[in-house]
Amino acid sequence: MTSAALSVITSAPQIQPANFLNLLIIDDERSIREACREVAQSLGFNAVAADSAEHAYRLLETQSVDAVLLDLRLPGAGGLEAMRRIKERRPEAIVIVVTGYGTVQTAVQAMKNGAYDYVTKPFSVDELKLLLERVVSHLRLKSENRILRERVKSKQGFGGIVGRSPEMEKLYRIIAKAANSVHPVLILGESGTGKEIVARSIHYAGPFRDKPFIPVDCGSLVPTLIESELFGYVKGAFTGANQAKDGLLAVAEGGTVFLDEVGELPVDLQAKLLRAIQEREIRPVGSTRRININVRILAATNRDLEQAVMQGTFRRDLYFRLNVLSLRIPSLRERRQDIPLLVAHFLERLTRNSGIEKLLSDEAVKALLAYDWPGNVRELENCLERASAFTSGPLIHVSDLPREISNLAPGEPFPGNGNGNGHGKIIPMAELEKQTILSAIAELNGDKLQAARLLGIGKTTLYRKLKDYSAHP
Ligand SMILES: Nc1ncnc2c1ncn2[C@@H]1O[C@H](COP(=O)(O)OP(=O)(O)OP(=O)(O)O)[C@@H](O)[C@H]1O
Ligand SMILES: [Mg+2]
Image 1 (cartoon, protein in one colour):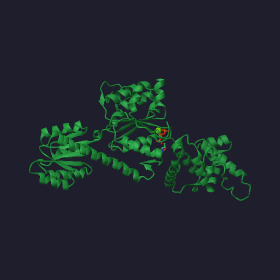
Image 2 (tube, helix red, strand yellow):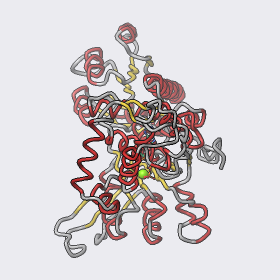
Image 3 (cartoon, helix red, strand yellow):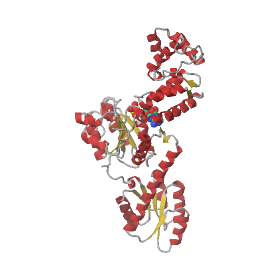
Image 4 (cartoon, helix red, strand yellow):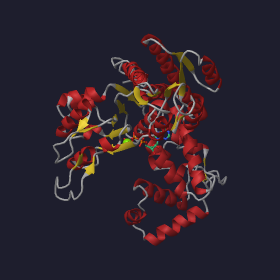
C-alpha cells in the first residue's frame, strides 16, 4: 500500500446514523406511544417510552437520550414544565413537542423555550417519519461539527493524535466517519504508529464515549486466559475459578472492546469470537447459558492478515467481519513532516513533567529528521525521553541521542569541542568516553548496571560519570 492508501472499504453497508440515537417518547396514550415507537424503530432509533413526566424523569436518570417526543397535554405537571425539566437534565437533547387542537399556543411557547419543532395530533406516520428524519440529519450534523470543533481546538492534530500531514488529515476524516458508525474497524499499521490512540479516538469521538473502552491485548495473554477474559466464566469452570466473572464483551455493554494484536488470536478462539460478533451473544466458560452482548468491536494488528488468511492461520470469515471498515496508519517515515510537531509535543510534555524547559540542538533536530524510525512514533517518544533523562540541562545534544540516530549528523562537533582549536576532527577522550557510555545505556534501554558490566567499569564509576555529565552537560 502507498502512503495514500488509507482506505475505507466502500462495500461497507450504508452507515445509518439513527442506529445510535436514543429517542424518548412521552405520551399518556398507549396507542400513540406504541405507534411512535414503531416508526422510530423502523428508522433505526433506539426508542424508549414513558407514560408520564415522572416516569420520564426516572428514565432520564439512567438513559442516554438524544431526542424527545413530548406530548404537551400530559396529565399532572404541565407540558411546558416537563420540557423545562428535561432540558435541565439533557440540555443537548432535541425536543419535539406534540400538541392537540387548541394547544398550538403552548407549542409556540415551547418553541420559544427551545423546542426543536412541533407536530399536531392527529399526525400521520409519514409526517412523523419526515420529522424524525430531520432530527437524524440535524443530530448528525451537530456531531460532525463537534468533531470538527475538537479538531480545530487541537491545533496539532485530532484529539490526542499529533500530525498535520495530508496522510494524517485523511486519517482524521476516516476516524470521524468511523466514530459515527457501529461497524467493526480494523486498524492497520506498523508497530508504534499509534493504533491504540486511533482506536481510542474512534471511541471517544463517537456517541458512546460515556460507555467503557476496553482494550484487550490478544498478543500478551495465554489463549485460555483470553477466552475467560473475553467471554467470562462461571464458578468452578476451571481450577481457580472460585467466583464467576463477567466477560469483557459483556462488561463493555454499549461501549467498545479493542482487540489489540488480533492477528495473534488462536484459531479456535477466532471461531468463538466470530460467533459472538455474528450472534451478538456469548457463552461464558463452563456455562450453558448465553448472554446477549451489545458492543462495538475495534481490532488492530501489525501483521499482514490477508497473508495469514492465505496461510490458514487466520479465519477468512472473521477477517471479513472485522474488516468492514479498515484504516491504515502511515508509518512515520511516510510523513516526515510530522516529526517536528511530534518532537515539539513530546518536549512540551517532558518540560511539563520535569519542570525544566527541554530543547533540542539544531544538529539533533537534523538527525531526528534524517532517521528512518522503524519503531515509529513510539521510538521517537522513547528516544526523547531517554535523551532528556541523560541531560539535566535544557538542551538535548545530538550526542545524547542513540548512536544509530546521532550517526546521521556527522557534521556536528561534540559539545565542548567547539573550542576553536582548529582541529574539528579531534575529539577529546572525555567526550568519546561520554559518548560511549551514553550510547551503551541507550542501546540497553536504560539498563545502567548491564551497561557498566559490558563497558568493564564499576557501577559506582558509571553513576559518578553520569552525575558529572548532568552537572556539566
Ligand atoms: N500521532 C501521534 N501523536 C501523539 N502521540 C502518538 C502518536 N502516535 C503514537 N503516539 C504515541 O506513541 C506511543 C505508541 O502508540 P500506540 O501504543 O497507540 O501505538 P501502536 O501502534 O499500538 O504500537 P504497538 O504496535 O507497539 O502496540 C504511545 O505512547 C502514543 O501515545
Ligand atoms: Mg498497541
